[in-house]
Length: 166
Image (cartoon, rainbow, N blue to C red; front, side, top):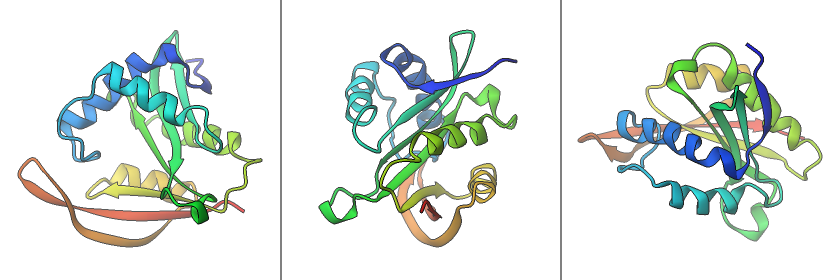
């Protein structure tokens, strides 16, 4: 399969929304409780797609988005501009075949010249696949926040991971 990796474009928003909504509806990987609309995702997209060290990248095969990864502000404060939060969402039919690793590699490659010091990722537990992916890419655990959010009638812990970028 000849998968291409590129910066996300407006044409990808509908498919990225469908992927994201799978996780909204079926998992605690995101604490959004109701599916997002394509129009809301379009606003989100233009907020992060082309602003400084914030990127959205996609993996695509035959014009079908297989997944996407992004970097966004870790915290919106002037003195925390060298830290980013990252995440990756894959089409559930394409989990486990290395696309997440390749997406993150592409994302971090696109950020190479940016003035960044640390990347963070919050993983709702349990999520063995996401933990393994982040560890494989050099992230290490910096702690667990207990019962951060409530979804599906229960509280979920979030483990935070950190990666040095400089």
